[in-house]
Image 1: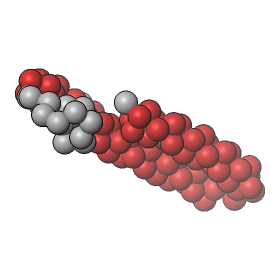
Image 2: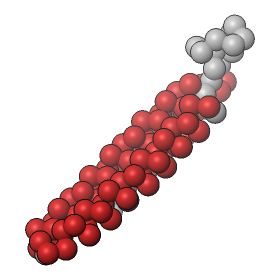
Image 3: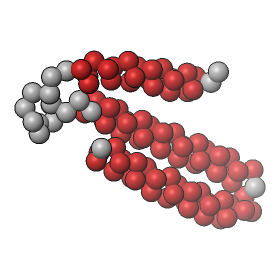
Image 4: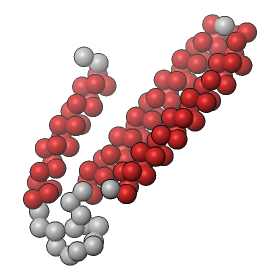
Length: 103
């Protein structure tokens, strides 16, 4: 298995293991950030979202630059497609961050 897949699976297992004790704690004062049992999960989701987006854009740029170096005559088309794809990835990332922060 790929190292990234192993890392993601390990992170998911650790999240599931740590969620049960966090949900079993007493809530304390209502409305406080420290009393919210989903705080760890929320920020962990934000971290995974940012890491995933950075990995995706990095792979996109790497492949685009490799394609441009192999065929310089189509570099303009590749660059345009790369910018559009990167914008779509960032748009999805902002949406995922919004969902993570709201819930």
